[in-house]
Every structure is written in C-alpha cells, then in structure tokens.
Image 1: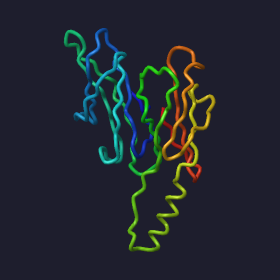
Image 2: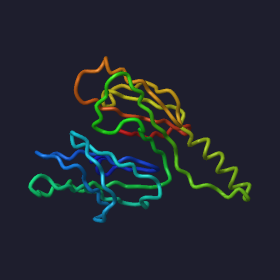
Image 3: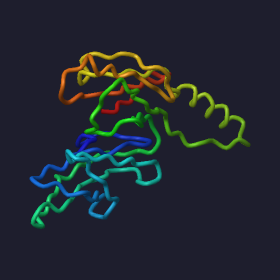
Image 4: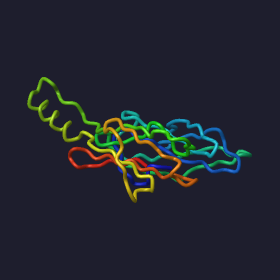
Amino acid sequence: IFPAHGERLSGRFTLDGRVVAETLPDSAEVFLSGASFGTVELNDEGYFSLRVEPGQVTDGELVFTVRATGSGGAALASEPRTVIYQREGPWADIDSLDTGDFVTGRPFLTGAAGWDTAPADKEDKEAWAAYQKLLKERKPVKVEISRDNGRSFQEAKGSDEFRYRLETQEYPNGELRLIVRVTYANGQTAVRK
C-alpha cells in the first residue's frame, strides 16, 4: 500500500496498492482503523487506486489495511499502513493515471496541486487580509516530474493544474516510477509517487 508507512499527508490523497495472488479477485476492500472504508476494483495485474478527499477522514493517525478473498476462499490481507493526516496543508495528486496502468503512445500526465486552508471570516478585515496573504504564500508555483524515482526532475506545464507529456518511446519496457514534486510560493513542497 502507498502512501508509505509513517508518511505525513494533507488535503486530498490517493491510496494505491497491489493485491498479489495466484488467481486475482475482482475487487478488494479497504479498511480504515478496522472499519470498512471502501471497495476497490483490481486491474488485470492486481493494482488499485482509491482517491481520498478532505472530509472523508479526520486529522490524526490513519491505519489502512486491504483485504481480499483469493481462490478457494483464501483470505488475503495487507500489513497495516499508518499515516499521519492533517486536512490543512499542501497536496499533489495525479488525475490521468492510476498505479499499475499500462502506458503507451505519448499521453499527458495530468494532475492538480493545492493547499487546503480553512477560510477566514470576510467580515473581519484583519483576518481576511491575513488569509489572503496566506493564500499567496501557499500557491503552487512549480511542478516537476521525475521518471527515474527522484534522481532527476523536469518541469511540467502549469501549477494548480499541471500536465506533462510522457514520451514513452524514450522509456525502457517495465515499471515507470513517476514522482510529482510541487513547490509552493513559501518554499515548501508536496510529493506524489
């Protein structure tokens, strides 16, 4: 399961993973702290993605597990994955591809980035001015893509919404480990793998 164990997350994020079995089931169930959180469809290789939007989870420690039933009724279960979540904060997400997708041609990798910030009261002029300043500091200013698991990065077009052309004819066959890194006006970053 991704995000990584112990990772700090904010805003929206995607829970990705893979179920490995001799005979793959069609779906798996995601649990949050022991309670059912959702059902995910598995692709032909057993990969899945589940977008988690702000408001679906609460701030604090989140413990995710994935369970499926394999051939012959065998129970398949992931190790628990604990992440630390805070709704307010920077985030980056990929919209056009899911983990495990087979990529051909020259598709665009598209996504979005932002910083969830609680709004201020417009009636309070001082609070509203401070909020507007905070929004400027928390604006995405640069999005970079790595195709080699973080060894090098190339800049994507856009910031709040971004796109990057995947030149698949340049890549070797096999897994492509993409990383999206967003830099905000205040210098902070958010990463999506």
